[in-house]
Image (cartoon, rainbow, N blue to C red; front, side, top):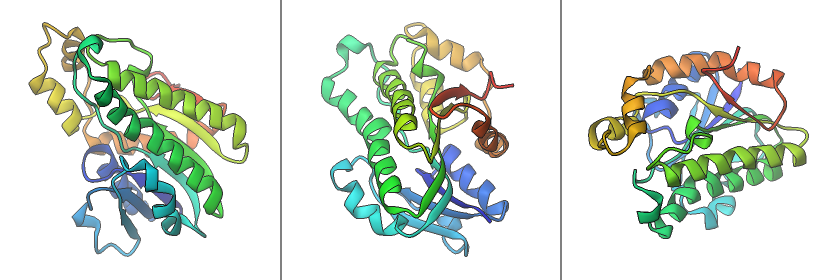
Length: 232
């Protein structure tokens, strides 16, 4: 049995990952704002309610939840899209809100895990192709995911006992993607049109793929950014 830590599991990929790891016989620890109720009575499911945008209290609040545990894998999945809008029209406060969850919460989580757990073997930050594709309208999200990639890269040089990877899981049918498909004008934002034409995985399909992919990440240099669509 492995101990798996996942952030953000109320829907989409996070929820599917919880289900997949529990079915695999693992113990799953979740930190997030909303409890995925269907797992609440599972004997190997442990939930700590926390709004990860509240980074100023994150370390002190979640310390006891992770303290004295060993985690085989920590999956930093929680994230927000932000508005699809040209960067020039995006308020700086909005970019800061996206960065708070997509970057700074993950920094605080990594610091907490490194300081207070008995050990963490592997940390996977869920990134995106948007981290390297500068598409019109994706400014806040792209900035946050490229920063996440570098966060993992730098920590790989500092936390030598932990293997870190930024991983793009491909396009997944989540509330985030549905918002783009249904609410974004693809004549104004061509990236939305490309998204509509791409292969969209169900969360269950994506979680199954990640369960097989995450152990393979250990074969790559710590700190790498990888995309499941281009991995061999």
